[in-house]
Length: 222
Image (spheres, rainbow, N blue to C red):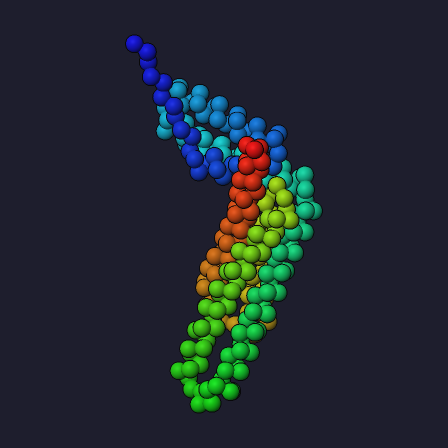
């Protein structure tokens, strides 16, 4: 009677994450080495320990791929990330100005009897209009940066998300230090909003990367 061989599945999310950062065939070999060692460890030490090992090695592999990306194309990543961050700041600032001008126009020509209730309502809608617009802009700019940084989409968009977060925090506390009309108590809300924007930047990079991978796979299968 033949013995059935159990095939142990690798952690799919870990495999997917490593695949997002692979730049070329040489770095793709690292994932094959991980797979071979995982199968060997699973047969010797059990599935649970092998999965934990695979996750830890995947994190180390991603860190190595990111470092390799910066070594091989530092200017491409830095320039695309900085350009994206400046473009995002420009769009967000002008979006806020346009919405404020629109509300001012609405107050003077449509609502002559303007009171505190209308003011609170307009401030509420202005905040969420700017927030939604900023999030959409983050997604679009993240996608554009990923398209420019071909084969290094994730490294560029992660750098952009980090730079954008640092710029937002720096501008906020600089405004507080300069005694502008900025409430320091708003920092948690602004920080949370920027974290959401940074997340969408990375999502844009993932979308572009997955689209390119699917297109390349279709060409190879044709």
